Image (cartoon, rainbow, N blue to C red; front, side, top):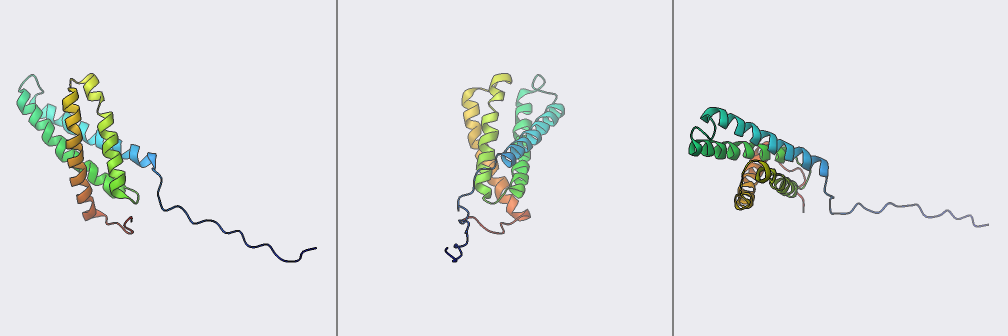
Length: 142
């Protein structure tokens, strides 16, 4: 009979790469959608809608989407898990892909929708940068 004790079981260290957490991404895509939709609604009310003055309406919608989209990405950056920029990139991609609904129902053309990716990247960058004013990274990702 062997009286030696077996070696202790040691858990392997966790992997360095973090997995994608879908829940926070969906939450933040919803934040982007809600804030930009509210801005578009208010812009429509303030300008009387597209039938009254189409150029003024589009300018108001663009400005409100820029401002409230930046606010949405600032909030998303503050709520983001570690790896803020990776998270914000997934949120921007999710918000852009789901904005394809605008092509289907609201007369946005495919080239306009593709151009929206540039707009989304700009507001993500500005909002993500502003989020550092409110919440700094405790452990920057490598």
